[in-house]
Length: 632
Image (cartoon, rainbow, N blue to C red; front, side, top):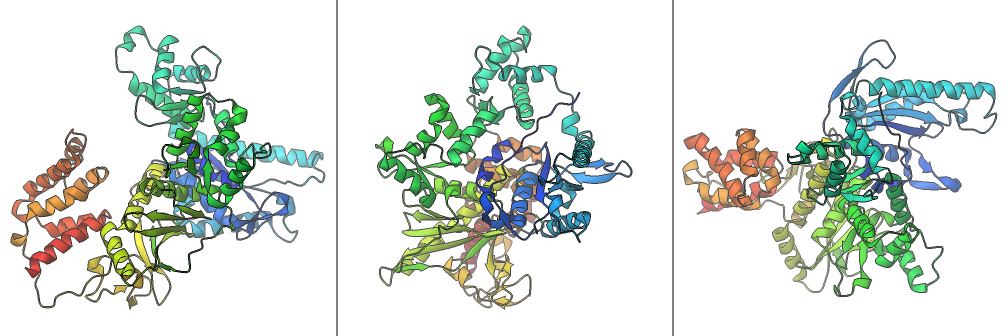
């Protein structure tokens, strides 16, 4: 017998940020759309109101979030129609439609369904192998709802959908993989009222329960059962029985009651408790949350009142929400005052809250961060909010300003603001500063060149994608500028892509142009010295070059870097997991490469590899060092 669970995700945009903990790459998804509405129309919500986003944007949000959660692109062959085999990529997303009875009479419902699917695939071509266009269309009107013919039609459509789900379920390896019976027993046990079972437990407590109820033989207790325990919890997480938060410690948290947790998340999102509040101070806290995106601890406590949480449960809920970047605590200007605790919650901001700059504030030109359209054509709101939370942890102070899908961070050691805004397919960056005197611009630009905040944000986005969307873990994001001729974005911005005057060439229209954005962000190449030959390999001090790389390269990038150098994965992995310092690990990998190539070792090859793995800042620092050698 096969066992599964059905979960209904809230479609409202405000709930998107809470879906991440429950999305699994080992699931089958059914994506429902209103066939009576054009995919380009703005979404209709309850009460006859219209949302700010379109059906296309909602579909992009769902598809990118769901497909990105998979750890691989495994393919399966399925005879969906019962005839010939078709190839799909995991995870599977089945499209079905509603409101079929509201389609205009002169339109063929199947043709309208196919048109919707075509428009979707046209905007997200890399996801077409994940999508099953079922052509199943349900009616929603109340007229003759219980008529025998309509009831029979609904039953037939339901069976058609269930057959489709069974067809995919039988072909997905995860679903058909045999697992120990005791795992199912553990799921039943964790949902019971037995002694020791709580709504929130640590893996240590789960381990104790497993031993207490005889899920392991006495002889197993002395062996290492941790690996099987983790496998079991990951499996139960994937089928929706529990939420397993892997903090990779003995205090990893397991939530045994998912419905309870979802109710808490929703209470926090819609700010439960505001109707019962009479205190003027508390009412003001609620009003300010929707304007500033900052929640006080008092509002959070009010929202959780109905759940009668213990202090341990309340603290765990906050930790879980911080772990998934749903909220982020803001450092207070008065750390001693615990009653003034505030939390950064950007998804609460209403669409009419826009960014306004002061009159005496200068704003730089735009720089963008994005991906190749063939990799990630749309950045989900949930990912953007995770990025904002990650940046909040980097530049955490009370002066952060929030507006709709935008945040403005104060950089204290540079005396300027960084503005991060979500566009449709990329993220825009600006910086701003108060104009106090004629030296202000020089000082801020010097700080930008020295601190490289754009690279910090880019790296954080890369880490968020790697953590939250494992399917795209190896996909690189790029810094981009707008072509002055065609208006398209181009990513060829590195020093070697600029001519000696610092001009770049558009990848779309081939036009060469000066970019004021590169100048503003300290990325423009200074004029080359004519007639000077590049340094020879003998002139290069490998020790100094290796020192530059070892200081800057993050340990998480070591395996990828080593493999591109031509070293064996096992060699690099052994170095990575050793007890040495990060600097020593990188230096060891570089030494292995140098020993392997001997006299053929070329530092310029390393620079190419660094750029290939998107470590452009390190490559540019090496280039500056080599240019100084050349001039000397």
